Length: 121
Image 1 (tube, one colour):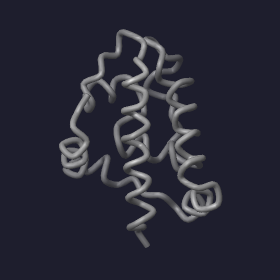
Image 2: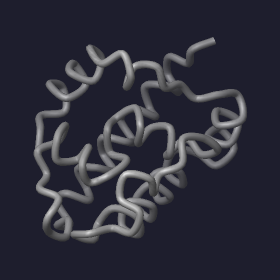
Image 3: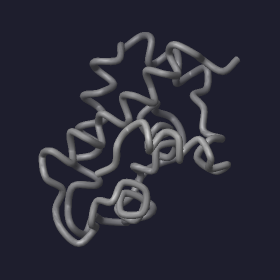
């Protein structure tokens, strides 16, 4: 797993990862539900869609819109096992550990929290 400051510095240099932003509907949903609920959604999505050693539809299992977590996953390269391996140094040939799940959720939460503080208008 990667140091979070180092990770976000690297993500900031990626034109693909940097282009993801929360839209008005995602921001409204986030404000309505609150960060704690959204983080519970993130944990649920990670456990159900990424935690297995060979997730179903790996590389295509995370939608690119309609939920703040989905957008955050693409922005933070936590969207599939290939991205977790490349960007986060988490091997894709085995099930995620609880510590790795916690790390992934923390990365997602960090990105979303920054968007709440500094929304792009």
